[in-house]
Length: 277
Image (cartoon, rainbow, N blue to C red; front, side, top):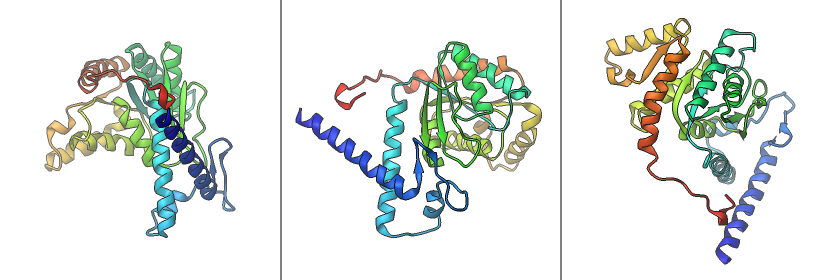
């Protein structure tokens, strides 16, 4: 009982500290992002990356990051295997890519995986919607931004991040395959992050699907140029499937994601009541 009480006290104390840090960094999860006098949300990342600050502020930032990771772990730990769908938040319901992402989400759910997205509108909403309509589950790892990133209504569970690197780690940690829909800088970042983690063996060779041949043709041409110049190896590209077909994409995911999931999860995780799980 003493150990349980100690854990709960420490957990509550960490929450109290994080609350104070949130007030200092001017962001509130319950109320949404607070804007400063320039209309800019949550600039703590910007100030952190500008260079050294006082030791006290660096320590506060570190404690906040640890707490944000811990909260993320508690949200997703028992949710089951996911396949992440990345893509632009700007595609509207009337666009073809929205409907394609919706079908992809439904297909992922039918395979027994959760759909993991950034939690926002556009492609993220479409994939989450498809999963829910197919009887599956949709998880969102949302980032607090001045625009675009309002959590969509199709999510079973959403975790709000204030830092891109925390969000990215969580999405990759719980995903066993990646679908890259048409998107912008963020989508490109997530695509090349997946490739880098696979190339450097930081994660297993999980499948990657590039949806949209015409859209991604310049990127595929760049990858082929890298291969030609020996900047990458042919093996680095073997798990990428480049297609317009939802059926082909799902077959690729089914073939490789299930295999990799079985290899990486050799034991069943159990909830611990004394940790409030």
